[in-house]
Length: 541
Ligand code: GLN
Image 1 (cartoon, rainbow, N blue to C red):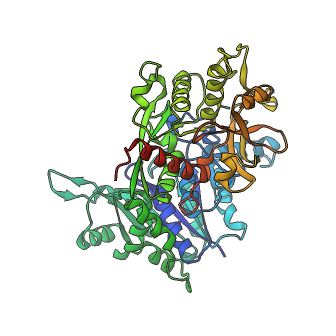
Image 2 (image 1 turned 180 degrees about the vertical axis):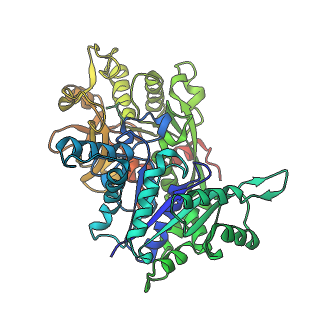
Image 3 (image 1 turned 45 degrees about the vertical axis):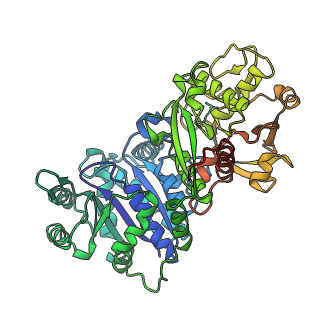
């Protein structure tokens, strides 16, 4: 029998609902329960695949090729589980399903309305993962802020489910903000009271209130919140700002969030939390024995959410190496031949980020050339790998106009070309090469050594590929294809023979790095950066 936890947010956005949901899930998982998390987003896009990274941050891709919200990345990184298409639902997808059904005549002439048709479809999807019988607990994070017009159907669906279920089978956690007013030297509870009142007006009463705050809440304040929000004092949970998102599960453990959840859901016989590996990771994160500086070159660097999974992968890989990873953001649009040495001169490693379109690519190519020639550890992801191929073609094979047909349709040397099965594609959403594909590694290659196996599987999100017509020339000149799709021969990994660490991957390894399983290329890249730093004598203790 699956139990359901709904996580809503009030007062403002960006309170970290995803992290609270993931932390609660981690604690319940650590007590031996099978848990998953899903996110319901109130916007009208069918999925975030067509959203600009400036709008929505990174698009997280699941094993089954769903383009999803970046919170699913947190769920996977915290829980060390895979999510899927079913774990992320938007208003757009709900309406699309209902409208398609209406066109098929499935509503038998009835007027199709928000209530009950849209809310029924929301409820059906909220229960889908639980219906598989694979989970003891399904946590549902409701995107947006309570009080927004677009969140209303979701809140109404939660109200109905609460009414339909036994009291001990579902509960609502509400995340709010307790602002500190400097002038008054006081934490203020009024916004929380209003936000809970707003929920009550919609018929949903939170069982637990998690309070984001810069300062500790004393018992008196907790009591006040409890009294005015009609919950027990033990159900008022303090969520102080943490230095790392990975500390939040332990903070929630201290506050007893998991215990009150288990009590309310009447789950007995659970074990003590098993967080040994998690704590070990945190220790390594907190007490590094060295430091490396990695340049992240991309065009969305103003918005760190655009590279969320890459940044988190560096946190995992850094801890694994007991090494602090300092990221220097390099805007690819402003890298030129004249300033490249100045911009990249202090780095111990360079990562060229994924991306789409022409803006900033020449800066990326110049940066790759610098890393190749200076033997600076290099790691290219997706577009980053494609830029490494173009740089090699231009500067080593002397094909001066080599390019990707994504940026220059008329190049006479399309070393990166549109995949054959993409040529007929005209619509944008969900039509890239998405999700996980197998890859065979060349024996004795760097990739083979990194993974320690010959067959791997990684996740993809692209339309262009390495043009195999050029492979012979590349390999003769020292850049080899060390990973290929066994069925199609599509080049998935390129690496340089004559370089201590130079690897480009067509896939997105950052999507599979978790706290418990740091991604091996990231781990080895940091290791190589550390060696590079030591060789320069700049590794700082
Ligand atoms: N724009 C490139 C392609 O579609 C790379 C995509 C990416 O970096 N995710 O192939």
